[in-house]
Amino acid sequence: MNELLVQRHWVALAAPKVAPAVATSTLLILGRIWNANGAEHSTGNAVLMVVLAAGAATAGAFAAAGRGGGDGVIAGTAFATSGGLALAGVAGYADGLPLPLLLWTLATTAAYGIAARYWRTDRRGTVAYERQTAVRREEHAHIERVELLRSRTQIEVARETGAYAEALAAALTARATLPGFDPQALTRAGLPELPAIDRAKEH
Image (cartoon, rainbow, N blue to C red; front, top):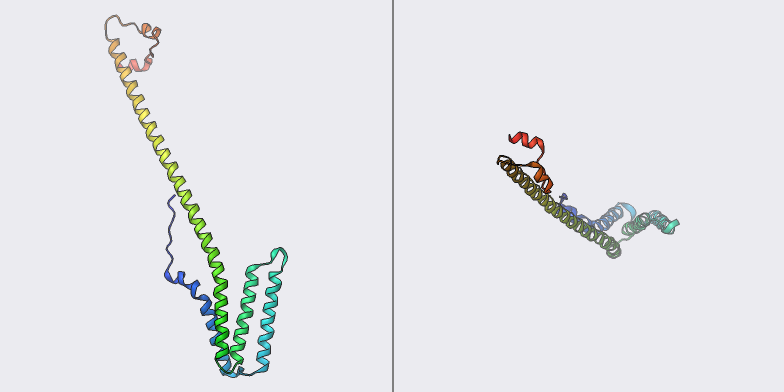
């Protein structure tokens, strides 16, 4: 019933929120470093990035159209890789910052748009799990309360039964000491007979 509550660190909570911006910013920075090291207006490098981006996009399309509706994770990863390669290629090939920054803005916006969908799904799953946990906790608490009341009732009944048995035994013992006591008369009257072992203990 007592479940372990784990409080996540603020870094763990913030990491998914900043991950899309960090990823696209890293690609932009790497592209500009590549630009400064000879990739600017390099046709061969541009062709290489186009081929890689097109290949990743094709792999994503095949994954999305696969049997049984495809694998969304593989498709999303492939498309993200294709976009990242395109961003890095443009950042490396272009001679100025306006076009790379424009693509960085578009890529970051698209990444947050896609991530927001998964965040909503994850949030709904978390809320549903918390509700189920609360319901189970209430059910367990109710069962525990019922069992506690039942055990207390049984204890009280046992105490009352024990007190009645002791009082009956004491009454029969006292009656047995009176002159003219007839145990068979009690039996014929329908009263419970005191066990022989108890009478022996009393005497």
